[in-house]
Image 1 (cartoon, one colour):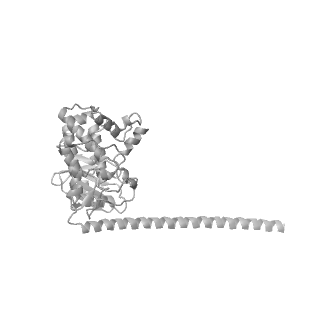
Image 2: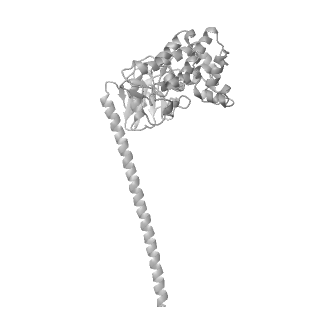
Length: 375
């Protein structure tokens, strides 16, 4: 009897010890988790605080550049509580608004900021340094707590993207090939200004149809400088970590430095892909039937140019328009050369577009087209 009682007490003691130990372990883990979570929250708050201070310091040091600053309540009034959304992207939403003087504006609300507010700083720093007919005008900004916004002049015809590409024959007829050519020239002049006309050279790094806005007269304006880089020493070669830009418009050297240095020639490449898209009325990132050279976009253009064949477009062109179209294609092909050293500068691109057709030669095929032909 005594032995059984002692054995029972011993078992209960073991169970009690095990239970207390388990509870202690769980409690210890919970404490560690809470402390770790608290540390992470503190780190996040520290990073956010540092980001806030970085932006405020930038704005203070660049008061002569920064446009007018608005508070968030002002934006709500301008947009009627954000009732008219113009578009939505990966990191921002854009709303129609109206300034107190009645001028229409586009207000870009940033959803989240990369790094220490790099996208916000890039945009304010870049566009505030510009003054060109083909660069969108930044009229103001908002930086209030976590709220960050940019206020631009309103572009009633939206982006170039909706006027080119598949299933846009009605929009393309509205724009017309002659106007399309003028748009191409205007964009080239805008990029030339960023590279050569500013006191601080600006590399845009995201030239694509979506970032080209059209005013009421369809004059193009380059927008979205969130990925831009400033080159104060006028150097054209920059260092960077990670890819920048949009698939379909990114130059090969951004992925592999063996192709060449990262420089202003990235914008030239992106422009080349875009102007080919404008001229060829096709999306360069879409698959067309199969992967043969004939259906590969730049390869298809080379084949038609070399054979002096008529291009398969959904628009009717006269002889003069055809020459302009051919000029756009040849310039575009020069811009997408694999070796960035063989791509023309944007100043040269403008000269080629505005010069006579006789002086233009079809460039050599980039390596990636040769590799396509061998398959």
